[in-house]
Image (cartoon, rainbow, N blue to C red; front, top):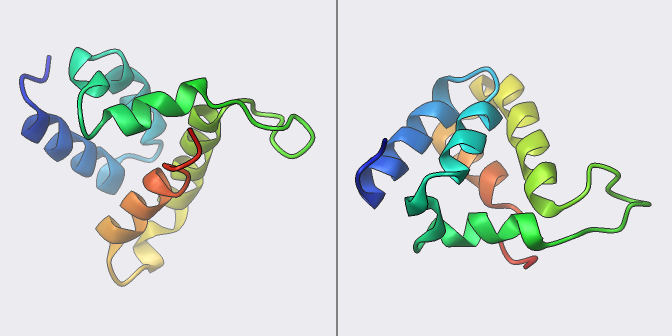
Length: 97
């Protein structure tokens, strides 16, 4: 269990940069109480933001974000800065809730 926000950030960064499917880690992290605290609460709130089923059949913004992060992981090595690229993928809809 991650013990503080800095550790959660560091683990998130590591998984974004190394995992074939970072969504697996993010799903586990979502259940950590720290994920409900600032600044991660902004990601946590994505689950309550529903989207139009016409344009987003995957459902809420959280599900969409996990799909985007996994797709981004497939091409992150083409970026000049993989960390910035992956965090941008993770945070691209942060304002929707």
